[in-house]
Length: 190
Image (cartoon, rainbow, N blue to C red; front, side, top):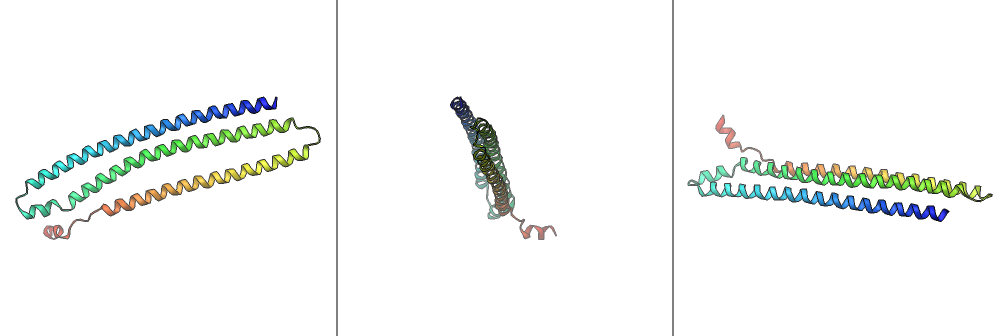
């Protein structure tokens, strides 16, 4: 009877693992598709911007017009474009990571519950006189589960810290693209 329970639990675990793998594959495909759409839109936008810049360059007849074209407005437009692109990609990646994390968390919780159930069932049918062994086994099992939960909490913290680091790095990169308005313009206005 114990072997049948074990086989049933293993079969259920394998079925859940296959379902989770299918779901994770679907998440990966959807994320890749979203990224491809973002990249396609970015390529179209870059082509339009290049055509506009080429038309402006061809229309230049005076060297001062060239310097005006290279002023901060153009650089700021590029920075805004880059920041928007980064934000879109970041959103897709974060959403995919959240879904993966949710599946992993649910799997861990399910596995933990199944293991607790298995240990309870296995120790319930222990022969008489093995109470000390069963108690020691349950204590060791509970301790290992507590350590596992601590590792999971540490991993969750590490993931949150990683996201904060990515946010800080993106903010730093975006801050480098911000171009100050030239002082010459402010003098003309005065």
